Image 1: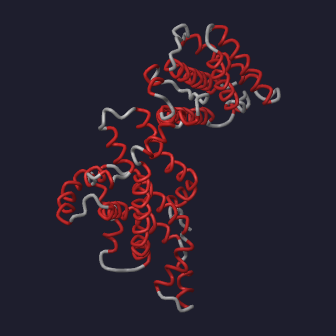
Image 2: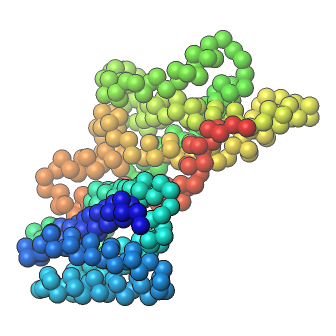
Image 3: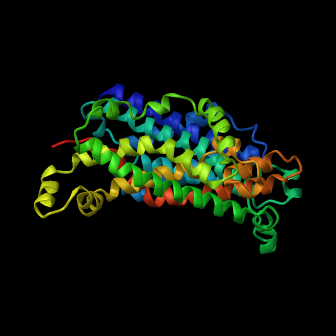
Length: 397
């Protein structure tokens, strides 16, 4: 038996399971639950025993039976040691143990005999630690924001970190915050403005980026090498450095408090990276396809429209998604250029509400959900295009 991989597995897996339990304890404490009787050392020892048992049993019994049986045993012992915990908390412990036992179900003594197994174990659990860290640092605040948007002022004063939603109330009371922000705070107008600005930025950026990227990828002209290598140089300068001179220029031109002004700024800031992403994809398209188009009588415009664009839809979709997200979420330029509430974008409107001390927290959270949820859904749906577009042109041959 190779003891080093076994010791590494036992230590890391036990730490991971104990970490999950500690996070669950923190979340339960935020709900007002007193869990001072739960001992970290005892829970670590319990996790160590579970990890040790699972790897020695390995694949000797049915995996589903193993997962359910040992999850129930672990939860029962945990509840017995940490007596006095409520049912919902114990249910969370059961879910954690089910997740853990399912994750390590393929570990057994034979698996520990493979080459480089110590490194595999470390990287395997490091990925799990990263997922847990992301969930706790990113997803948990978003969930708290989402839940808070359904609270009443009285409920927030009683327990501002309550993670539950009371759906026993009247449906109007549950969604009151959303009714208020659309009726009283005119969020419909802000959504319309943000949509126009974001979609307009995408269209204008693609109109300029596609021919420019094609020129960099295919044509020979003076300064091509410098342009292709320094196209992202604008991102070396902090946005705040550009804001002050742009503010002065836009004030003189009457472009402040206007959608046109934002379209100019957003297009200028997203165009370089759009060209950079597209030219890498255009280079991966066989030049013979374009030569065939020239033989058929197509000019350069026809080649771009009828050949390059159809073949590059994944890259174009990823660029469009990237530009849309930048324009939708951008805050600094909208803060500096928009003073009139009738011209506010969503991010500027949230900032405006935050500056009002009398705005209830649940309304702010409802507004934040309105800002975040659409772009989140769009990203999840088009994520495959973003990945394929970002990796396009990275592999040659």
